[in-house]
Image (cartoon, rainbow, N blue to C red):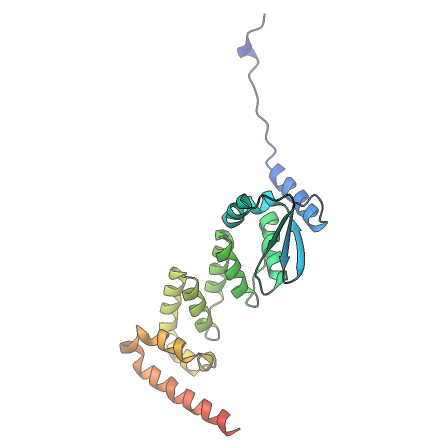
Length: 211
């Protein structure tokens, strides 16, 4: 009899196997094949796979545990079904394209569905695209979603470019509450800038009133 030790076991692994499986699942999603969940977004129907949603999002993992019906149907609040579908596709492919047109809604969805990877991508995108024409929008967006590291970096960036920002157009579009919030912790540093902006706003509104 041959000793068992003479025939050691070998473990084989196809490193591309998970990618192949997810690619097949993605193709099934696009064809609405073998899908077991129906999602309603702004009267549009999107079909997907429960397991993919649950594996990708702690939110879906939690909510699908409490929905014990034969045919899952969920409604999602989203202003643009295309953006939601982009997020859904990311759960299958790990790929998403970000631009300023969708960033606000994308942050909302990533925050709601606890998609930390997309959230990190959004932070990287916002930080890399900062300029005098969007820094205030980005600052308040970061504050809204409690992205402290990003908002702190933007504050420092604004401090270095405050002259150009005060001369720009974006600041004229801020609401009174936003102006107050922005200058609350910076009165000593930016007081003279605030006066400059106030005079610009007064002139801006006067011009519009005279039209």
